[in-house]
Length: 152
DNA sequence: GCCAACGTTGGC
DNA sequence: GCCAACGTTGGC
Image (cartoon, rainbow, N blue to C red; front, side):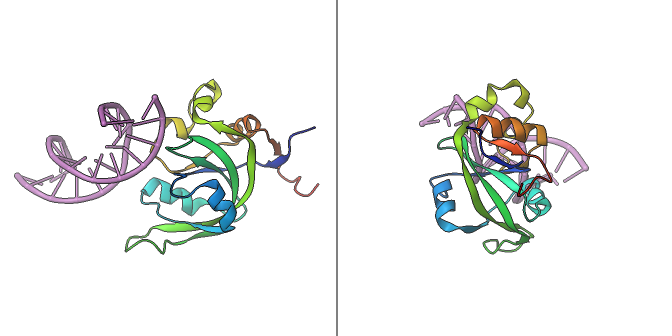
């Protein structure tokens, strides 16, 4: 049985599962990704495009990548922000990873040594290079779907 | 519970 | 504009 094929995620977003977990995301359907108050993370949110995929990571509790979400609405003013130019995007669950990928396994993989998740522990929204995304997908029990192969 | 990383604030 | 103090995040 081949692993399911999915589009390569371009991003990774973090959530503390006791605040908002993958199960919450699945239950919610479409969820506004709010509360980002870091300028680097904000700029990544602004660069997200409709249809982009993102890894969903449980920080603090679990410390593992648990699923993949899709951006369904591009950056708009964060309704939870008072002032400032903070933004939110809307995301929806695509699928869980057949095998969640723990931070420990990511750190043990030399090819992922320069991943932002490892190098910049506090960044909550980050880009993922295609070759890193492919490694993470395979570790999670999925296979990358080549661009242009959608629906085939 | 501790502490390193790092962003922000505010005095100068 | 510099930098010390402080607060927050998040891994351990």
